[in-house]
Length: 117
Image 1: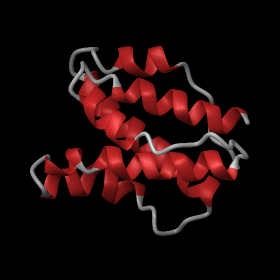
Image 2: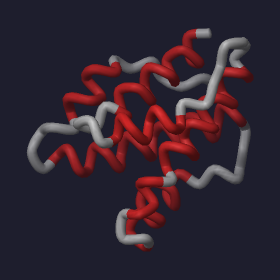
Image 3: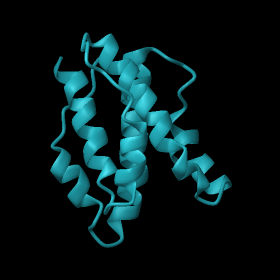
Image 4: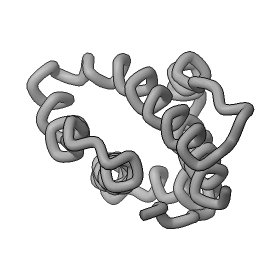
């Protein structure tokens, strides 16, 4: 089952709404990991652990690993959807994380490519 196609700009902008932005970040990560888990049929993906528990247990250091993890899952989903030019955007996501949270927009646009294929 493919995930929902969302507007990447809106995904990024909601992160700037005061008090909602922090919760939105966790929620969005949980939703995309749930969609990837069902699309890839991979039970090793645990959305609750990866979006909430690990970041808290590691005092936020897990955030530096997350772009690589999600990048690899995006690449797998794009290949499974039939896109031949799929590449792991992990390093790009890490760099964009430091540019006003643009990584959320990139994640959603890459997922939209997989869902639309």
